[in-house]
Image (cartoon, rainbow, N blue to C red; front, side, top):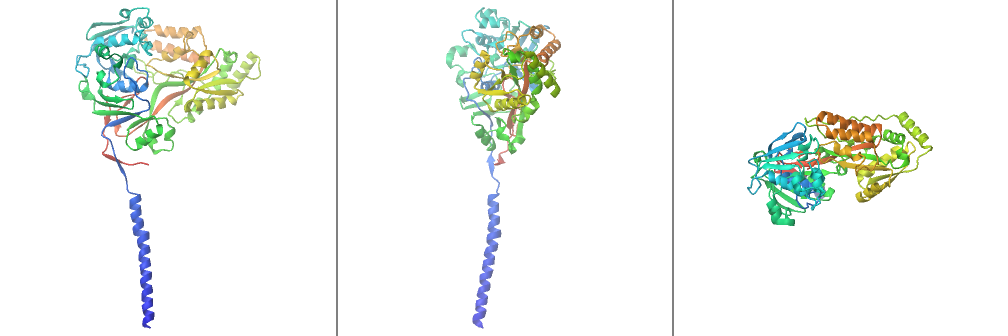
Length: 553
């Protein structure tokens, strides 16, 4: 009996031990595991605002500048007579004030008395005159000399036909610069915000020669920041203590890093290694980061051009059928980069001199009957029952390829077969110049605030007129606009020209307005984004990050 009780007791001890082990393993250790796996991880946030760009940093000579990253950096460390402020309105920069003649042909700028280079030397009117004439000097052959052509005799000097002393830029004293234009231009203040119009010190160019602007030591600065250092992969900016408006500058430092790989940019953004990147949109699909995206309007339009040198497309009825058939709202659905369906070729970022948006007057109304009637009329006029295959040229990038495929699909539904040729820019330009195409997806970027910059693409004598469109009435509308000193009447003439080009003559079909998608941390505020010139301005920006943030997957 005693032995039996002992075995029972031993059995109970074993059972209780197993039960305790089970409870410990499944409750205590499991809870500990949960605490370990679900413990929040935090990342330290850098104390300096970091922006990531996609292109290596080249030389920072404002006269030679031809890359967007150069414009972006110089817009922070240099300043011109004017700079783009809120709502992309030109505001005084190094110019304290300006006077404009009633006919918009003469602009006189007064330089601020407290405008200083970062080495303490005063900014003078001659610094601007020297920079502009340097950009136009025919010996230099700078790419963007044409931006100065509205100035009297600027083009003639650039072509070597007159001397620099005959260019319409004059200095009456160290503080006053007068600019004489050939034609009225109510948008000239926007033009002088661009990079090539920045001042340059002649003594620095003469001292450093070809080494000028290759390092911070070979430059001096007039903007909100100065360059502390830069390599092709990184630029370090610090606040400019000599800047005339330094009280408005809240950032003490900015780092601009270069990362070509878009996926790596996204990872850096998640890891707090950067606070601001431009995204192509594709990487943001199904991502929580999409919630911090900013859709930035750019002065960029994509449109479909038709080669009128080809008999098929010389026929206006066929062109109208194509224009009526293409539904760019459907095209927009296939894109994830912030682009929107275009109403005209002029992007809706342009403004009049009284800060009103210039809206397109183009109205294309889809009608299946109208498409069918126009196509039938074209067939009858050409004496055919079907069109030959049309060759469509496009750039070899994701957005352009998506556009081309959707155009091919939509035209295929009305019996027009399209073959797509994907080309590098140089190859595409060659085929367009030779007329070896039927249709072409083109893109044009706004250089400054003037709708004529887009509409002049189709003037009869324009080198950019790949459509071979020649129309005296269209040319006349643009010529009238160029001579009109009344800004309201000028805008009306340009709107009429756009409507005539797209609706009446069906020369070009607007596709999309190209926008930028940017990821920006919520603790970055007051960065101004621009539709032309530099992408952004940091003069008024603030950066107030927490010490650390919770890590995201």
